[in-house]
Length: 218
Image (cartoon, rainbow, N blue to C red; front, side):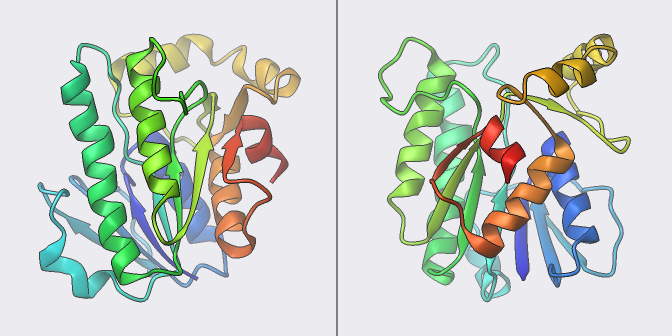
């Protein structure tokens, strides 16, 4: 399996990349992002570029891949809906449309979030934008799956790059394992997200939108 990964420097992306490096069936990983992932491995190749909206100059390098794990994301805090939509919807669709054209049989897995609004009409801005993004991805001519994790426990020394998130995880670290063990409907881990993505890319899944409990079961 050949994998393209977007967002390998973020907390979720780091976890997914780690599992890809450990998985024998993953032959190679092309990590694309604005900053280096921090990983070094024989299976890993990286392309770092400021403009991710236009991938036309690297299209030849994007052909022949079996899966894309799209882990890019940003908090909507302090942003207008237009700003958040440009980063969340416009960027994701620009990438996805390019990959669907080059690899129409590809499996594309998008990390969304618990509470995403598929109706696109609710009161919560980020949930509407994420819902619009999911709906558009599901219409593209490849095998698209939406991952909607709730709380994610970082494992194996992985940390969020966002300071406020790092503080939140530090404060909640003593209770997260307890919460995870008792409420699998709402909590997963970076390891399980990565393992589930690989499994879906290899075998598919019974439904296209997967919540935390589905991720954990996979």
